Length: 221
Image (cartoon, rainbow, N blue to C red; front, side, top):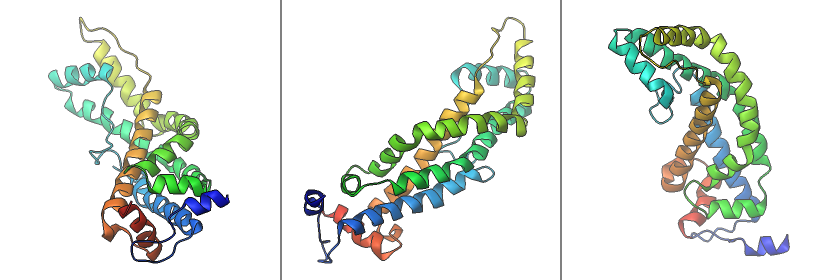
């Protein structure tokens, strides 16, 4: 532990001393800010659907379904099918915050130094490595339930039946639960990375004294 403490930078470019505890707390504060600001957005109506960074589009095997429905004038049905997939993701992300909060609390002093002085998305990648398995386990059953709750199972049953009734088309039966779960996870990490990038590159995004002091170390690395 003493070696770790001694290896940490102790002062900012402004000459203000910072302990390893300060650095750890500053990084946790930055992650908490990203989780609170960006992940919360995803849980709201249209949090996925109206956000082009994370909007869930159709998997490859269903793109032909979408096109075929539109070709025969069923645009509204195709649009509704896309919307309900995003609604299910918005519903599932509500399960993410407690898992993220626990992961942030587990960051060690050594982790904090490496993350702070790492790549632009180092904190996001840390979270991804420590939470992805737990989040998938949480998201998957919620997505499955949400697909039913928001009517996606009914909508997609109708869509697939319509498509499968079109002559000379190969029938499809995709695993939508697994697909939407994966896309929801990608969306969560994408938005946390957005906030991390803001804090790392824009002084105006460092909204507390601690964030300003800690990330000044990164600026001078």
